[in-house]
Amino acid sequence: MGELFAIASIVGVVIIGAMMPGPSFLVVARISLVNSRAHGIAASVGMGLGALVFASLALLGLHLIFTQVVWLYLSFKIFGGFYLLYLGIKIWRGAREKLVSEEEWTSQPQVGQSLMRSFYTAFITQISNPKAAIIYSGVFAVFMPAETSNWFPVLLLPTLLLVETGWYVLVACALSAKASRQVYLKSKSLIDRIAGGLMGVLGIKLLTSNA
Image (tube, rainbow, N blue to C red; front, side, top):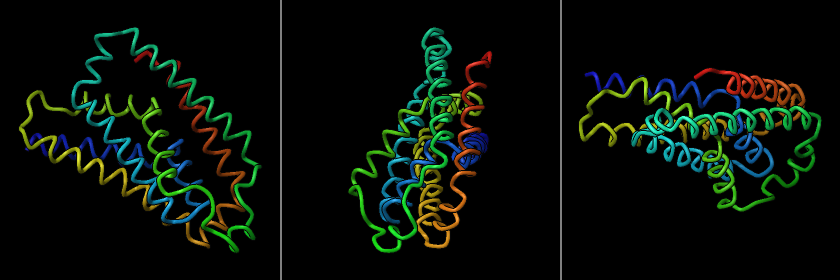
């Protein structure tokens, strides 16, 4: 029962983390808007597999490594904070830039990169996101039981893969629809400024945190 509660707790926190505005959301959104729903789904799978990498590392003791090797954790935290701050500023400054015009999307929605490149772009974005690594290591450290059964990772890892991929598939499907795309394009400046501001705040918070 304790292990099932741990799995439910980890999955719950991961769901909340996945739904927060961040580089992963923006990459899937951009790919879905510029290309097609299929490209967005390919990117979603890339995000899910990237998250699976962090979950596997966290299961093997990523948090323990951070705890024992202090300089590694501090370096990772500083890099992560500046990374988020950089992305926040970049998104904020590009808020007024149009991704595509409504006319371009209506006449030729499925242009641009291949499905594999969409997958690769999303996967690299996910595994290069230090915030994701820190979230996974911290969540596992808090909720992981002292001892686990053999079935624990067998159930936990596929569940996390499904949750992460499923969320981004919803994002891809929503933003690849014509009505949603038009709303986003019209409100892009505001949405990007909010997302950029949030990411900047997260970066500053990470840089100034004591833990």
